[in-house]
Image (cartoon, rainbow, N blue to C red; front, top):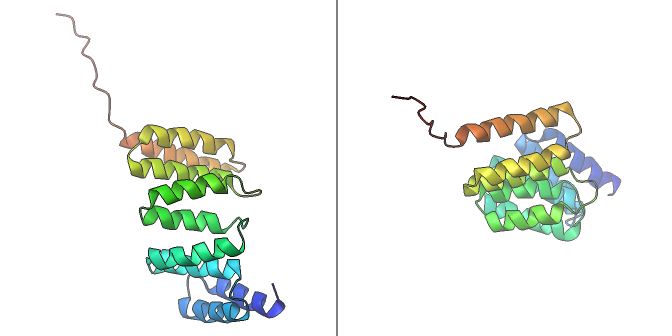
Length: 169
């Protein structure tokens, strides 16, 4: 990353998400210096995904960013959320599997996303299984509490078992 490109990328990052016009201006400057900058392309994808809900355009930015830097630990996490929101289940599953092999990536978050994918597909039992896997990779109390809260939420969605009447006549 050159100094000028870094300056504009960090300026864009500083403005995101509260001042999108300034963010977009700085991001366009950063991309004009280096159109292959994976971090800048990822941020552009986030804007289209998280702010504008234009998932198809966001996917194009994320795919391009992944082409330029396949081992970037930030891109898959945002790209997966985009795919989940766009209901691209198969693509999300493949990306999660790939991302779990990236050195240094937050595996707890990826297992949480895998759980969300199962939940969206309607398999609450599998969602709970993946949350147990996510707990293994939690290294802060905050992330562990988040996983436990998610587990409690999913359990609340599960159908209640019919209670057997133990009355004797």
